Length: 224
Picture (cartoon, rainbow, N blue to C red):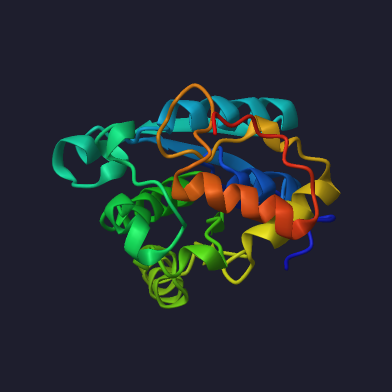
């Protein structure tokens, strides 16, 4: 992992407001000069954006929200179709495949690379993790490598992609966050997008398991 000490702020982080990206925000706060979030119409977008803004304000990191209205208008995914469309059950490929938003990370990373280049930032950071690999093609090692090559080539070598948590488990991220003193009650995971976490969808179950496997108390309020 990169050391954050005594480094110039040279990085842009794609920040959702979920556990993974909020942990990365704190982990690399000495390097992050700008965090961007995307408002793309997902069921849980507004809950995530609230927490993304909260943490950036707390750390004094500039935060921009980029609207991507065309996602909901043109993409098919249960993540864009309301809470009732989200399957309940385990966080695995068969159960979660309907939540894939086609090439979401590719589109967001392309925009992030352009913004980073325009702001003189040399690094784009994404907070994918090992548990995502089975479900989401645009979180896997081969995607990160290919997208990293495209970003570097497309910016004349001025911007590179860094994904420090690519091989981390969710529980390892939770443990790192605990070391950093993060209050995970101030993050969002539930794909149904209700007022509190449902406790039954795949992301809620993954969240519960992450705290349990890390030996940490789960601060989340669930309806089930």
